[in-house]
Length: 141
Image 1 (cartoon, rainbow, N blue to C red):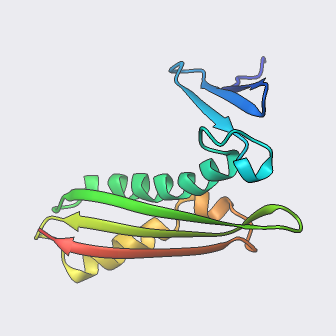
Image 2: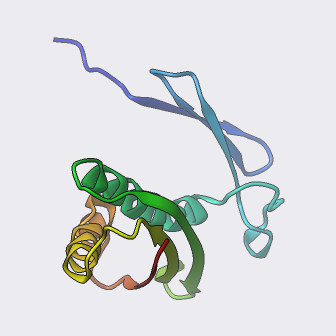
């Protein structure tokens, strides 16, 4: 059986990649950051790692709420990445979520939603040495 590939990555000078989602044809560019010899004109690979955590949490929350009697009205997140020098790696990701839910959501609903969100696949896939500081600010509307 032939292997089924999901994505392609093509290197383009200087220090840029084009990443293609094969099923849709959508592309994402990455650049090396300016502090690591790059142009810094697009997300860096470590930026994508950091924002992937936020996107995964948001997606898991959206999936969870689909079967609930309340709505996810708005969800925004601010993401901060902290790099370590030796070895060069992402040392910490901080994410501050601001979430509006419909008034039907109980305190227990929000506690469960947060617990489900913290168990997203990206969070569980990151190395335990990578510090994840994720906060949730819920507002009922």
